[in-house]
Each structure stands twice: as C-alpha cells, then as structure tokens.
Length: 215
Image (cartoon, rainbow, N blue to C red; front, side, top):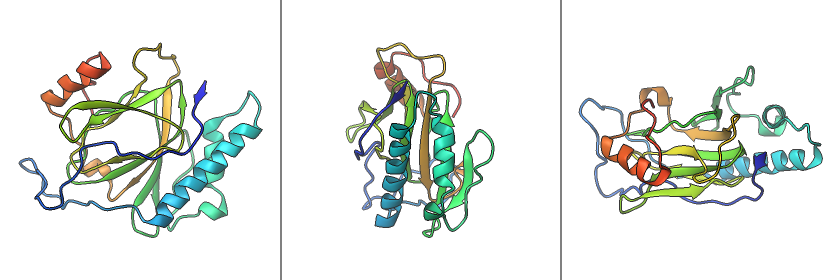
C-alpha cells in the first residue's frame, strides 16, 4: 500500500538560533552550512511531486513507484546542473542544482537515526510502502512524531536528530520502505553522526522500540 496525497510543509527538527554559535563536538571542524531553500528549489520539488502523483493516479494496480520516479527525474524539465546517477536500485546520488546543493533520491527499508552537526538538510517524502512518521525534537527538546504525507517537507536544522520510522501503533509491512528526495549543502558522509544516549532514550519513549545502533 502506498501512502499519501497532497502537498504539505512543516518543520522537523530543532530550530536554529543564528545569534548563537552552533554546538560543535570535539574534533568537528566543518563550517556550519545553514540556509533557506530558494524559491526555485521548492518549486522544483513541488513539480516533481505533482508529476509523480499524476503518474500514480493514472496507473493501474501494477504501478511501480520507484520506476515512475526514475522516469520523472530523467525528464528534461527536471534537469539539474549535474544530473544524478539514476541507474540501479538507489540511492540515486551525485545530482547538484544551480545553487550548488546536492540532490539525491533515497530509499530506506529500515530506520536510520542520526544527526548532521554542521549541515541543514531538507527531505521531501515521495512515497511510503506502508505508513511512516518523522522523529525529531521540538524547540523544548521534547521528542515528536510528525505524520509523513505526500509532498511534505522535513527541514532538519544543523545538529537536529532525525529519522523516518514506521508509523507507531500499526503493523509494519514486511516490505516497508520510505522514498524521499534530499537536498543537502555537502556530502553528508563527512557529517553524519550517532545521536546521544539521551536522544536514544527519547526515541524509545515515543516509538516504543530501542533506537537503531548505527547511523
């Protein structure tokens, strides 16, 4: 079962205070890259999702969401400054838009809980096999779960722990998967970190399961 329908935007993650120096752990020397997405980046995402929704509505029961997304991202109107590698099962990386930010399509069959200490990230869910929620912390450091709906926008400020999880309280299908497009200011391999034990405890508090051990 593929979830969602309409475009909705919301913030997921701890808000950043630009008047204060961001927290950096020992050994973290990367410059903090925080920004607001440009209007054309947001419009690009809305258009991609709108075309994906139309393809899904026009297809029959054999609709393949990954192949539909691959075909849409290959269209001339969605050409980027550097085209992502759309071969294979994904993730489809190496794309770059005219603002110099990376664009990738990611397909996760499991939970990945982590933080990017020095990088804002923007995630745009495209589809879920099953249902999903986004885990993060609110402005008071309390754990929150936000419903994942089609075309939604998860903004993770630098240092904000985050993860997509199967919707709490309902059975998870064996083939659960979430697909999203990520827009990032750098290669996140150099800025992906484990969360603290405190965050892991908060995750368990709202999700009801131990947090994954890796990133």
